[in-house]
Length: 514
Image 1 (spheres, rainbow, N blue to C red):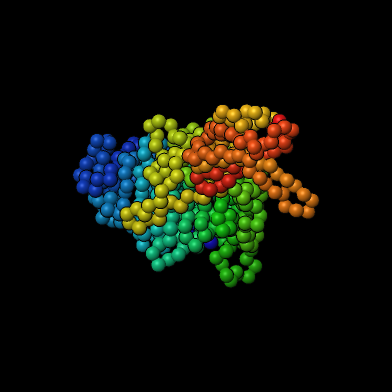
Image 2: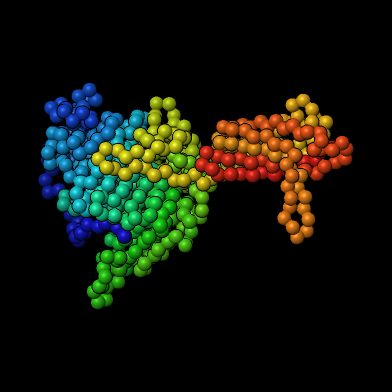
C-alpha cells in the first residue's frame, strides 16, 4: 500500500515560548557547478553549489512572519545529482531535504532543473519536503523507495499545522536496485500536490501514495495530477489507525488515474491484529472531475467509500505521447475550477484556456509551449518523448501509448460525373485530420451485397498519400472502361487514415456516378 512513518500523538501548544529577533526572508541561488562552494549564493551571478546553498538557508522558525515559504532557493537550469548535493555540505548526501519553510525549484518561464539522485539508500526518500516548504517547477528522476515525499506537519516545533506543497513537478520513479517496490509521490497530512505528472514503472508500490491517520487535520489533497503506473496502482491511500469515529476524507480533483488498479484504498491496512474493540477510522475518497476506468479498477479494503462527482470513465484518455491531451480528448475543458490549481499548468502556461481547466497536469493549449518557456527536458511540447537512461541509473520516462485514432472531416460530393473521372486529372476530394497522419488512402469501391454472403468489394480506382499531414487532397482518376458508358452506378468512396502510432480511421461515403 503506502509508506508511512510513525505518527505520535500531537500536543497543541500555544506557540513558541520565546521569540527570537525577527529574521527577514532570504533568497538564494544554486548551480550545477559543484566546484562553487565559496560563493555567497545571493544572486544568479554568484550562485553556489547545491549542498552549500542548502547549508546557507536560515532557520524559518527564527523571528516573526509566516513559516510557509519564508525563504527561497532557486535552482538554475541543469542536472543535479548526488555530487551537487554533497558539494559544500558533506552531510546532505542522503537525498535532498527541502528545509522547513523554504521554496525550492526552478522558474516557471525557464528550462526545468532536473533532480536525479538515484537511490539514496534502503527504504530512503530521494527528495523530502519538510513542513512549510514547497518543491516547484522541477523534474525529479529517481530509483528509490520514495521519489518525492511531502510532510506537511512539524511536530517538534509546537507551532501547529504547517503545510507542504508540490507544484508543477514531473516525477519519474522506478524501483531501487534489489527492490521492486517504490512510490513516486508520497503525501502526508496537511499537504497539497497540484499540477504534477507522476510516471511510475515499478511492479509494487504506487505512483501516488496518500497517508492520513487523523480526521482532525486537513487531509492530503491531489489536484490537477496525471498519475500513471505501468504495473502498480495509480493512487494508494491508507490510514485510520487512530481508531476514532470521524471519517477521513481525501480529495482528488481534476486528476487522471491510470494503473493496476487505478485506486487502492485501505483503512488500517497495516494492522494485521487489531486490539479488542478497535475500530479504524472510515475513509471516504472524494473524486471530483477525475478520469478513471470505472469501479472495476478499484480495490477498497475496510470501511472505505468513494464519493464522486463528474467522474469520467474512460478506456482511452486521449493523451499524446507527451502526455498532453490530444485534440478531441474527453479531458479537455472537463475539469472544475479549484483554488489549488493556480494559474499555470505543469509546463508553466495558463492553467485554464477554455471554458474549464483540463483534467490532468496539462492544458491542451500548453502544446506548443509559449515562447521563452520550454518544457522540462525530455518533453518538447507536442513532440514524442525519446526515453534515455540518465546518469545515475534513474528510470526513463515511459510515455502513455497513443491509442487515439485520427478524427477526420471529409468533403465529398454525392454525385460524380463519369466524364470527369476518366479525363484529364480526374476529380479532387479533400479531408482534414485532427492530428498529423502518417498515410492516407482513397478508394472508389463497387460493393455487391448478397443475402447470407459477405459483401464483395471491387476497387475501381485509388489514390494513396504518404506523410500527409492534417490537410489532405486526393486526386482520383478512373479508367472509363471500369465505369461503363452509361447508367448510374451506386458506389462507395472509402477514406482510410493512419496516424504515426498505427491507429486507423475508416470513413465510407456513398456516391453516385452518372
